[in-house]
Image (cartoon, rainbow, N blue to C red; front, top):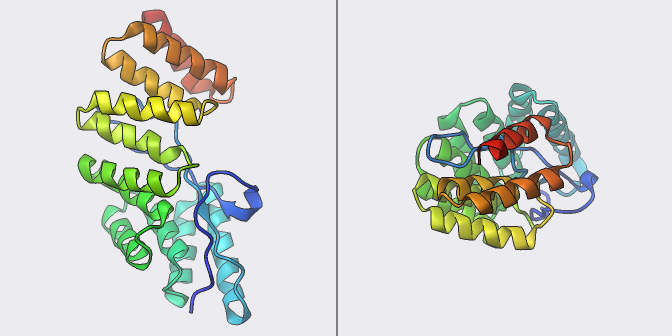
Length: 238
């Protein structure tokens, strides 16, 4: 049997879980997505006996993810699930690694397996939503993100991606509301301010766009130089 699992959380000691970063692909009718929201993917609880080797492989996969070696990460996660096919974290992480390589059919199979094991696993729902954004299924993506947000309310990433999906569907009022609520819950999250600025800009509300972009620059504080440069350029045009 698989080791017990901890559910996804958005805050806590870094050693307690891995935090791979994922982002949706840009499109002409979505908010700019240069900022990549993070999604928390917990490591399985320490297994006993023969399971220790699989935890070690999982952690090696997380390390490969952290350095951007998605091919190595996929290989390691595949090894984990081949030996312990009931570990949902392994399937979800494999799906994420395949998604980052653009291997959408394989990623879809891995994520479907993860969700068959645990339909309420937030990280798998997030990755499934990102996959659907990439292949043009924005409505399905929005449903995945909305469910992930309800299951993992302390993680801002599902709400940001939900707004992106809503904007792709042309539901800008809904996207604005999603981000406004998220901003109240996560006032120090720079990505929320940034995406709110893009939505206000698209709806023609220049004053609110300037306010949101300015808040992004204040909160970001030099940690995202490329995106901050883009935002300063946008502010000059507003």
